[in-house]
Image (cartoon, rainbow, N blue to C red):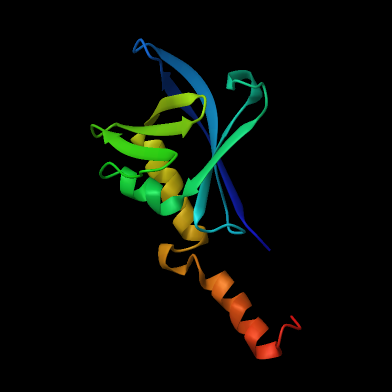
Length: 138
C-alpha cells in the first residue's frame, strides 16, 4: 500500500517586472515514487488551462533549502531565512515562485516519515533482487 501526502500551500509568482502574484499550489509526495516530490498547480493559473505538475528530486528540494541547487529544469535557492525560490525552466520561459521556507521544510520533514532519505531506492532494489532470485517469475 502506497502513502500519498498532500499539503496545500501558496506561492508568489515573481513577474518580469518584479510584481508578485499569489497563486495556489499543492505539494505532493507518494511512496510509489520515493525519490520525487511534486508541485501541482490548478488550471486557472497555468498557461494552457490544464492542471500542471512539476516533478523533481526530493534531494534537490532539501539541498535548495540550504543553498542554491539544480542545473536543469528546476532550480531551488534560499531567499533569506523566510523564503525559498523555486524556478521552473521550460520552452515557454522561466517561472520564478517564492514559497515560505517553513512550508517547504514542514512538507519535506513529513516525506521523511513516509520514506527515509536513505531508503528511497530500497523498493527498486528489492524488486530487482526478487526477479534475480525467482528468475523473472515475480
